[in-house]
Length: 190
Image: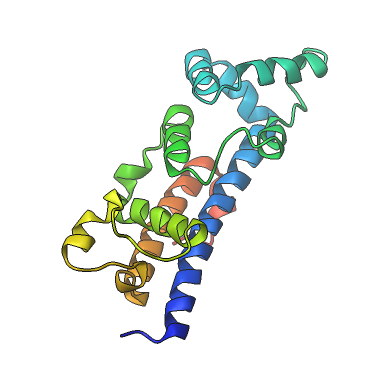
């Protein structure tokens, strides 16, 4: 049995990892949508941009910002608008997955070694933050673990398991960075 202190540290690690993942995507999308070159490049790919705007209900927002910017596409700072007005929920892993796929042709599910475990870690974070206990009873994402007699998140996640999932998430972020940014922006990656 894990000590109470160790359980708390591991639970807080889950929360921190998912929070950092959300912050990364929020920052990335602010950066790319504030980039005039990115906006102008994607205006040439109208169908992709239109699909993105429709999926996230941003079309009228984009039109309004362009009008306020005197019909110029430079200096829109649309990424800042998206983030400040909470137009995309970066806590929702499905939203991030769909955003990357529809706009950037990046499929994070196929990049991952074990997407199911990443998805479950998001669910574990949700349980830890929003429930009064860390119970997984009756949670569909943890059916297998519940079938093995485990009833709590603290019985599922060891330090080693969290590290494995975190490394998989880091691999996804590295691949996204390599696709989105010039090589000099990612020289720390090997």
